[in-house]
Length: 141
Ligand code: SF4
View 1 (cartoon, helix red, strand yellow):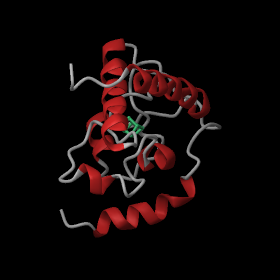
View 2 (cartoon, rainbow, N blue to C red):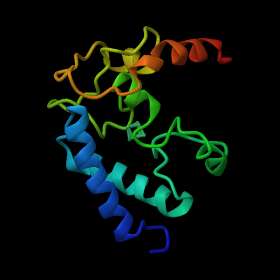
View 3 (cartoon, protein in one colour):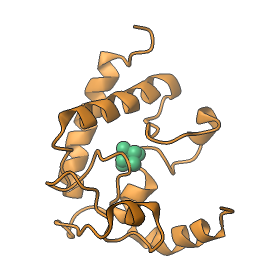
View 4 (cartoon, protein in one colour):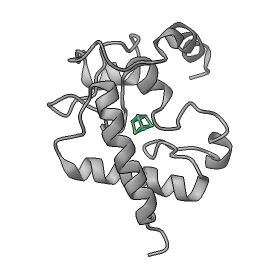
């Protein structure tokens, strides 16, 4: 089907996910359908846009969005807070890590406090947390 991602992109994203799990100390969701669906969404965006834009969000203009790195997988939320909104990178119970999210973030409201089982891994952009939170609070709601 024309709307399906290419096998090459699916394979590329599967490899990326495996490597990123190791790097970040997370695992994929115990329900493999969740993982497959996110991987296919990422692969489709890779095919259409040339970048693995997060498939779990709405964008008024996808092409404009890929000019920023905010929602390119692994997105800023993952690299700063280790939080994956799509449930692709989670803990053993299939829950996203919310420990580092600021109060009032949607992930905290949805899942409560979920501790990071591997605090020594991931969050390469953790130093940007303060800057990111400032931007979030300044955004019109
Ligand atoms: S929420 Fe972030 S880390 Fe998770 S799949 Fe989307 S872009 Fe990737």
